[in-house]
Each structure stands twice: as C-alpha cells, then as structure tokens.
Length: 604
Image 1 (cartoon, rainbow, N blue to C red):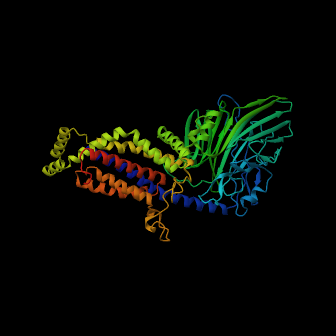
Image 2: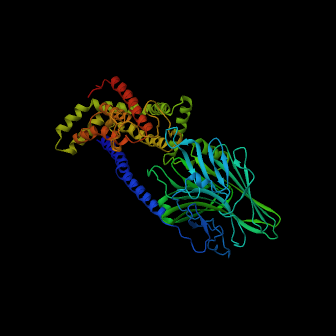
Image 3: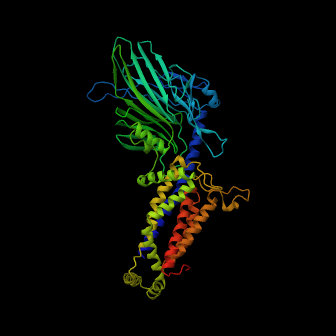
C-alpha cells in the first residue's frame, strides 16, 4: 500500500508539473507574445520625440531619437563629495518602416568581420559592434534557410549591439560618443588581423581602441588614452550591451532567457519582466561577467577579472518599446599629463557551446563562465551526462546512438539496486492471490485489511516500497537528460535515423495524419508521433509485469497512465522520448529474466 501511495504521489507530481506547463503556461505565453507583437506594431506607427536637454540623433527613417549621455552622473558617493559617473544609458532607436537591414548597414562606414564562424561588421560611427551573423548556425534544418543573426544596428527592427568607451565626471572633457566617427587602420577584422580605431578630441587626448577576434566568438577590446594635454584627467572605462524589444522566449520554467551575470563568483539571473519591474538593479563585483542570454546564444561583457566594477541591469520604456541594457563601470583611471592609460576587456557574442565556454573559463580565468548554460538544479548530474553523451557522440558519430549507450551505462550503474527492486516486485506478484483474499475478507474494514497486509509483508519478508526505487532513480536522470537535450546547442539539429532529424525537437510525425500519408497538418495537441507511441507501448508492457494495485480505483488509474504519458511526452524532445522508450525496453528485459528465474508467471 505504501508503495502504491508513493508511486501515485510521484506520478501525480510529474503529471501536474507537465500539465501546468502545457495547459496553462503555454497558452499564457502565446497570449503575451501576441500582445507584445501588437504593441510593437503600434509603436512603429508613432513618431519619436526628443528628450529635453539631449541632442537629437538622426534615425534611419528621418525621425530623431534620444542620444546617449555618456557623461551622465549618479548621486555623489556618501562622504566623498564627488560625483561618480555611470555607464551611459543609450537611447531607444525607432523601428523603421521601410529600410532593410542591408540598406541600413550601407549608411555608415564599417570595418568588415570575417572568420570561419562569424561575419558582419563594426560601425565606425560610434565604434559599435552591432552586426554579427553566425556562419555555421541556421534558423531551421533547411540548408538554404537564413543564418542566425545575433547583433543588429540601430535602425533595424530590434537593435542589439555592444559598445565600449569612457565617461567622466568632468563635463568639459570631450569624449567619444555614438556620434563619433573613428578612423580605422584596416577594412577587415579577422582572427589573424586585429584592427585599431583612433580618435583625437582636439583637447590633447587621443583615444585608441584595439579590437581582436579569436577563432570563435571572443572579442578582445583594449582601450588606450594618450594624454598630451597639460593636466591630468580622470576617466572611467565602461562597456554595455543594449537590446531593444522583448524577444520571444519559450517560457519554460527550466530554462532562463533574459539578463544574467556572475558577480563575486555567484550567478544572478533576471527574467525580462523582472527587469521591467525593477527598472535598474546595481551590484558591485570583483571580476565576473554580465550579459543577455537566449536559449542558445549569449552576448556577455567580460571585464578584467581582477578589476572592481559597478554593474547594472536596466530597463527603459520609450515610445512603447522595451529597451534592456547590461553595463559595467570600472574604477577611475587617473592619466597624468604626458602619459597614457590602458584597460582591457572582452566581449563574447556567440553560441553557448559547452566545451568552448569551459575553455574560456579555464584559459582566460573567466569566473564560472559555464553557468551561462542553464544546467539547472541537477548541475551535478546534467553536466557529467552531457560530457558522456559528447564522448559517445564523438566516438559513434550520432547523438541518438549516444543516448542509447548512455541509457545502457545508467542501467548498468543501478543494476544491483534494480535487481533487488524487481525481485521485490516479483515476490509481490507471487503474493497477489493472497493479497486479493485479504482484500476480499476485510473489504469493509480498511484498518484490518492494512494490518493483515503488513503482517503478510512481514511474514514473507517483502518490502512493498522497494519496487518504487527504479522510478525514483529514473526521475532525476530523466530531468537531467531533459536539460541536456533542451539547453545544449550541441543537440540542436542533431539527427538520429529515419524521420528524426533533430533530437532537440519533438517527433515530427503524427498518428492523426497516418504519419504523413494524409496531407493534413493536425493541431499541436494531436501531434503524437511514432516514438511517443512506442514509448507508451513499452510503458504499458512494463506495467503489466508489475503486480496490479489492490485498490480497483488505483488499478484503473494506472491503466490509463501509459496513454496519459504518451500524450504529454509527445511534444517533448525526440531524444528524451527515445531515451524513455529504450530505458523501458531494457527494464522489461531485466524484469522478465528475473521473473522467469523466480518462477513467476510473466503474463497476468
């Protein structure tokens, strides 16, 4: 009885969790996306207005937008009597009605970016890194589909860019702004050819910015100021990432999409609505990093890991357009007359590949950079599972086969415990006739029935809770593997065999279109593919090997569980469903052998 209650509690918890996501959360997310899209369309129809006290900057459609204020100051530090500047809060660009991205890119002078993994450009006006496209990732499985675009310049639908520079509490010092046109020493930036930007403020200060790119997605930005004036100057280095518009997120509770960072060795994650509510969240840190993440992509600022910095998560709403910004401000740098000052920082703008992030963490000393991937509460399981899958995939050449081999490894690891549990269940099945007699004898007195059942278990030396251990062990492994399949970009578009061309996506076939024979696209809740059906069948067969519940109502509920799980898991990643079905097959084989050895009838 205790065994059944425990299993029922576990199953009910999983059912409620999954049902909440698909029956409530998903419709809510779709409704929010529709509302945001309507708001964006409405915002595009409005004309922008200038902000008093700020010079207007031209936008791509002839309107004006608020310009950034790079020398804005924050309240004085208590006891210091000095004004400490903040990183500039950049304005919200207007979404153009007409010009395409290509036309906007041609409007300003640029240095092209060329590498095996990235293409794009850096705008010389402002020195912004605002045009990045992945060469080895596409939007869909179709090889002719567009490449993934990460960063976009001001004037496009949703500007997303990184900016570096200096601020000062002395407003008389002329500093580079987004309107400053830099001079470049070359026309193309590549991993073998760094570029140098230069600008002279006419007051004796020369600004030099060296930008380098490695073979992957890491930019190194070194800023130097040469002071040829007669006075010392105090400047604060900053970096920021600005993103206009709230992107469409999947909304799954197991995946973080939004703003995040590691401060003093601790991860902090904020959803977009959290920042909308708070407006500005500040935090000091020694080293660390701060950025904005999507499911598979990350844009992160990485200051000197030994520097003390002030960080900010910001949100502004202008013209009904959401604008998010992450930034950091370094400690003041005093540059004496006739000398120079230099700061170095990095920008990661790329795919969240586990091995790549780990290598940056190790060789560049970036604090806990692997936490950019949302491995979740089961981090201690999720990441090792990923590395085992990666090792098998590299050896076998297929992540689907790697999942099958991983399942075998997991089964072998828990083989002794599973054997003990299956023996207990087999013993319970042998006792089924005696249990039925006890139930019939005490059907009107549940207390005596439970007492007689416990006495039977004691006499036969059977633990009724032993049979639930395999399920309890499988649940954390299930969620850890789910995490790996869901958040790891290595699983994205990874094929198996036959019709499964993306293990991170649901089985594309459907029972209700006769698996493609009928030219009809069923609604999503009817998309029940071949692998989910196989999983449901194996779950049913495994259930038939176990002793039936003594309670008729529990027996009916258990009878429907394979059907319920088939429907719920139909829209889960195909790799996870394949794992579950294969795990069931291995469990059936193991339990069948044990039952045969114990002389228990296999058929009910």
